[in-house]
Length: 141
Image 1 (cartoon, rainbow, N blue to C red):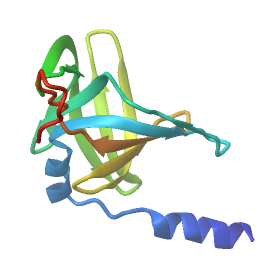
Image 2: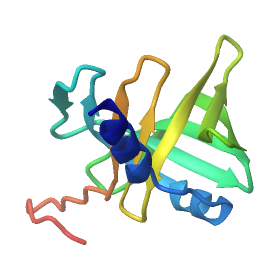
Image 3: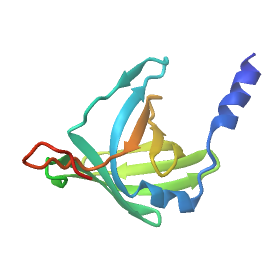
Image 4: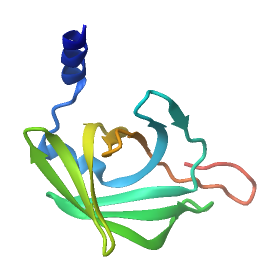
């Protein structure tokens, strides 16, 4: 039974290629967190988003806040990001003046991605779209 489950877990893992990393560029919001024992925490409307800008294997992740006019307010909080490919998977290595940590990139598409940290928490992100509300209260595209 354990062997079958192990094979199932390995076969579900996406083979991430260097060309896939460009899909990270843009605005993302956390949709849910799946904890190591399987319980989930869903996120509703988010005020804070992550903006990734990666060229090749290096870039940044910046915390931003959505504004009602469809723009994003940039904070001074950011992390340097390096993408690392190994035989164990694809990893996002973060570095600030105060800390270093890694997350494994489990899957990625144009609309979502999943990372797992060293505490086995999976963070499920979805592509963020700007909120743009005119003075008349109608949402615009």
